[in-house]
Length: 252
Image 1 (cartoon, one colour):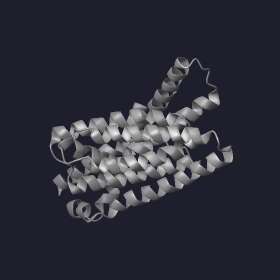
Image 2 (tube, helix red, strand yellow):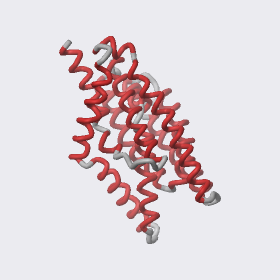
Image 3 (cartoon, rainbow, N blue to C red):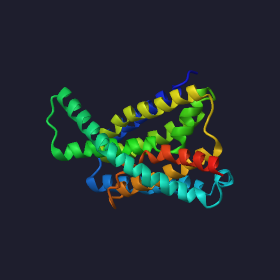
């Protein structure tokens, strides 16, 4: 197999899942769609809790001290949120989703209504964040890049395929567009892995995993319609968490 096969398979499963979801969604009532979205929000919350549990990673606490991981996550989220809001990442994601929907609509000679446009954007943004924020995204892509195999991305592909069915049944074709986000994020990480030649140290990986889990809580809150947390603006925290971990290790 070649580096990048995991990302290619992931894109295919999301596209297939989204297609099945849209076909199934036409036969479901709005109430049923809402129940599906709520169920996916609860599952996302469970996955988030599992990832955030890495705040207690022994490798992380041994490297930076027992009290530092929580402070590192706090610092990464606060600084990442400031940076992301200044850069307008969330707004950029929404704008990209909107432009993509409009382009597709023109290609199909359609005239999308405002509600349909918002549904497309929400489907693209929410599914992109779920599919691209998580330990399997990072570790799997890096391992694929350095030649350790794509087993982790194959597992992620299966999970994302089933999630895409549930997402698309409620949120429509915007979920299929998230395959582009997977290509960009996982493709970039695969190239990074090929360049670095090794994976993140255990402490830094735990930092990314725990921070990613916290961001997924924000995704779950959006899906459950509790609060529209601008998770996109918080994405820089995934980069800052391992950086802060490394800086703390250098200072101790």
